[in-house]
Image (tube, helix red, strand yellow):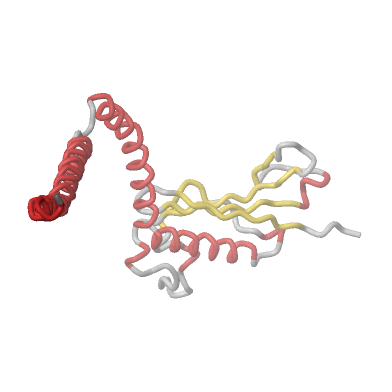
Length: 219
């Protein structure tokens, strides 16, 4: 029977082999198709990620461009109304101080020079007081024997005024009690005299310099 039916059996076997080969041949394209589909899935995932990132970026952009709220704006205005006037006052005062250094230097120079001139005299021969203010330029103490001005004579000193006080000082009192030079004194008050020179600038500012002169008590 095998001999009679061998060919059909072989044919059947051959058919089964051919069917297996055909199936194997069909499965190969499927794998290839599946492999070719993987990149498309990756690209889809990347596209989804990019879309998500774009949405997040647009949300953050909208959040950053939101601007100030009404409450924040009101707080900003209130703080500005409080801080700006104070800063302006301080800045203006500083500007005025820097704009007048020359006048201050001149006033100090005049006052210190007058103090030196007064205290160069003996204690009992101090010059009398000069009250009220008189013009610095052309003052009698600044004239030589020929009535020529020798100090503070330039036009830069025009408008400056000065006065000086010479008072007895009572060191035992608290606060100190200044007595005019012409009044009588007794005890320790007769040994101390305060000399104060006041200089007024053309703009009305006043500067002063004071010193104490003493008399040595008699042995």
